[in-house]
Image (cartoon, rainbow, N blue to C red):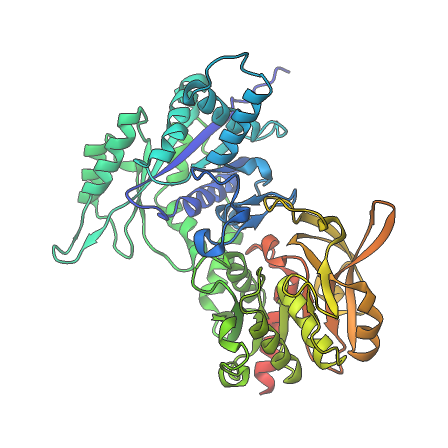
Length: 554
């Protein structure tokens, strides 16, 4: 039988008027709707900044860095893609202007252009198109590729990407492309109405580049785009009225796909692409949204971190809390608290954290706020409050126990104090001599063997797990015996590996014995990166369960 598979279809999503308009959520939601109708998707984010990747950015600058299984440090929108869809994410799923130019310059240095003048057109635009094609090169069964372009139409740095899309549409055929423009329709209180003019100007700027959107998603805040306004946008932007989608602010965010479903966004897209409108099933997704909305019990978590001034700095942790709430039929009320508040001489943890049912200490780098985190870890341990440490949150727990349980005064991590007499946290073997900061940490998914009769094993219900990492420092095994014998610590997760000619055991998860603490667990990896509403992360679920038990015992 002849192969009747249709050509690969492409959806390109751009943004207008302002940044952070919600393109990532829109792409993720559409991906979910298409998957519910039996289509396999691939999804990608193209960022216009000149950093090669976001790995070296301060979280205050760009929010969290999302890590994929294959060790790519990527934009946080990939977290949305993973939480909403089943798309396979890898380093191919995110690229930047910096990565594009870096590749082109390297080709020029290698003589690939045979002495020609290297220019934005065709060389940069060709490289962008190559990245789009490479997204699905190993996945023959992908039906639809969704490509999100970061930034805002009208920005100088976005122009090469938009020009590449214009060219790409002609190369693969207009019938195989759908352009979606996500834009802001602001509410003007004095006039008591939504204003569509910014959207009209944004679409005009896009059309000047040579791209006509097929669909416009209008972000309207809490307001609703009425029929008259939809007709106005459709008329002035040359888009059929069914292609004007109202994107109201909805809570929880997992209800957004259901809003798009009611407006037939997926049906409109499939018709534009010439694909069959198959029957869809969103029952499982509807169920989790209903469970989130109907939960009545609450648990309060203090999340202590270094980057609390940026709402997206701990985005995946925030969402993992939500998912764990779904699993425990409760609402998780979390509050991020700056660890510097608890530095020596400042506020005492007992003055601030007494009313919470659990304490999480999040990841981070550098010296700022470390002593505050150590003080919080001590407070949680001594007061038997459920404690969950992630990455640096594990390291500060180790430092605190070294100082206060083992009597190792001035114990520290060599990241903060290279001259510490007791380096209970030290540099990974392969990190010694590494000077470049970009993409050189221990990154990506690694196996972890769980020990029987531990909290970790009980949470995962299996002996071998794979979790994603992003760190340079580790627990120093020279102190393992003292921690086990004198502090009551259990090493419940271990990564066995061979490095150079050495056999090593990296400590991945630590716990305290149950007679010492009801629930004290910390991990070197980042469990939040794999949590989804349909598959909540096991350690987060166990932590929230323990917090509920602690609440009910008080």
